[in-house]
Every structure is written in structure tokens, then in C-alpha cells.
Length: 388
Image 1 (cartoon, helix red, strand yellow):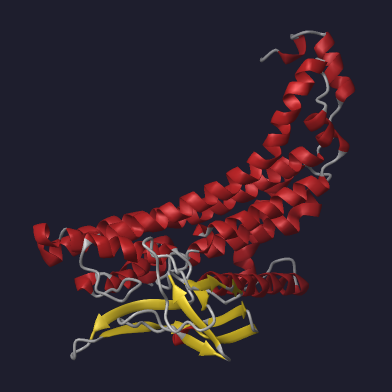
Image 2: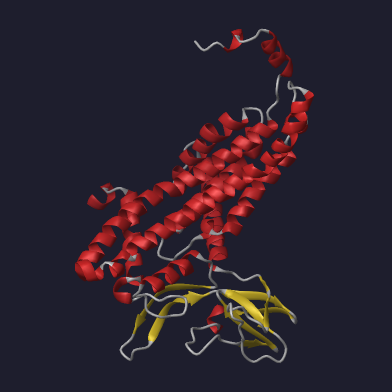
């Protein structure tokens, strides 16, 4: 009973931090190349690798009794389009190799992975050669359609949403009050409807866009929460994902916009003609800056949050010489726990902000302006604008 009374957010943060500690403690983690994490350089490399997408899940690494590095994780399917067509295999084929880049031969096509990117070697090449900037000179990138860590995370989030909303829909069939997981989802659905969609889009049009707003809200929220688990998801910290989400908002706004919206962009009413010519390019630029602000805000906040949490956990290594193993671990745990609790709030906040701004942009595109009333108000000067 005591556990049930504790704040759920605190427990989630505690589990997250404690589950992440083995990746760093005592140099027990491993960077992308597989070496121990026991220096500032290896820490930076590990954090960079954690923030990037990956073809497999690497949970942690350790050194066994024989002195060999053992990597614990699981592979994901690799799907690439090469010069000889589609090739599929598991990412475990690109296992860690201290002697160089692993060459995978699939049907006469030689493939290798360099900095988490898959390359196809040129015909006749047997190993990868690099220039002074460490760029491959005898290999070229392939079209990568693999189920990466981020794709896997999005599939899980989509599945959870389908199961959750199906449960909510089935709950309403049994009665006015849903049961099970539907009871948890209903307040959030009503919150999106009453506090985001209705005020920003209006009673006349909000129902048309509820499907999109609910999808984007729960999709971002679930992915953000998954990013706090030891699996190392950083889906909303991938710029490609946030760009796609912002493009959905952009196209919905443009294809749903009415004539008043386009009129205010290309020929703003109520202003002199010279000003209309000046304002038109600014308004057109504003069409693109709105979705740009959406994608940058989500990407930057989630990436920064992951970076801070991982950096604070890494303090146990950098402060070990000053405070000892126990002292540095305690400091790292307290700071990381504090930031992780904040990250749980940020996970919801970023989903709310993205959904709220999307609804605001949609509302600006579909609202109908009463120009006659506006002109009458201008004729009466400032009397109608008096603040009481």
C-alpha cells in the first residue's frame, strides 16, 4: 500500500536513473567502438551515440573474466536497397570488431557500417579505404529502409495508441463511463478537446481536426516517455521525425485554409497598397517559419534533456577522483533523479505545446473574419477598444 501512495513520476524517474547507471558505473559501459567508458572523450562519444539513431539496441557492456568485452542487447532488421536490389538481414551481422569495419556479403553485394550509416563497397573492393577526413573513398551509401531503433519505437507507440483508443471506444459501448485503460485516456482526450481544440479552432471546425490533434499529442507524449526508459529511445530527438510531424501540420493548415487566410497573406485587407506589397513576402515567409518553429522546439528540447541526463549520470566517472566511487555515484544519482523528474513534466509539456501550436495555426487558417465589423470599428476611432 505504501508503494501505491508514492508519486508515479518519482518512481518512473528512479527506475530510469537506476537502470541507466550500469552503463557508466566503473567504466562498465561501451562507446560505439566498444571500448570502456572511463574518460571524458569516451563519455562524449557514448552520449553522441545514445542520441543518434541505431540499427540495434545496445543495453550495456561489461568485461568478462577473460578480459573480453561483452555487449548485451538485441539486433533489428536491416533492409537496404543496393545496386543489386533489396537485401535483408539482421544487424547482428555488423558485430563489433576491433580489427576494422565488418564486411557483410549478401548475394555478391559487400556492405559495411560506418558511423551508423550503411555503405556498399565498390565492385572489386574487399575493405574500406578512407581519406584524410575519414570519409570512405571506395564505398557509397545505400537506400536504408531498416527498422532502426527510432522506427521500432514509433511502431511501439503506434501499437499502444491503437490498443488504448480501441479500449476507450469499447468502453463507451458498455456504458457512459469507460473502464480500464479507457478511464485513464478519457481525461486526456477531453483535455485536448476542451482546452486545446475548441478555444483555438472554434466550435464550428474543431471536430474536423480532433483526429490529427489527438494522434500527434499522444504520439509525441508516448515517445517522450519511452525516451526516459533504459532502452535509450530518442525518437523525438531525431530531426527527421520532428520535420515530418511539422510537415503534417503545415499541409493540414494549407489545404484547410479558407479565402480569408489567403487574403491576409497575399493582399492584407485594411492597409494601404504599398504596405500590402511589403507585407505579402513577410506573410509568405511566416507560412514556413511556423512549422519550422514547431520542429526545432521539439527537437532541441528533447535532445537537450537527454544530453543533460546522460551528462549528469557520467559525473560518477569524472568526479570519482575527487569524491571517490561512492560519493561521485551519490551526487550523480541525486542530480540525475532531479532532472529525470523534470523530464517527465517536459515529456507532457512538449506534447502539449506542439498540439496547442498546431491547433492555433489551424485555427488561424479556418477562422472567418468579419471585415464589415472591423471597418465600422475603424470608423469610430478608439472608442470601441477602450479597456475597462
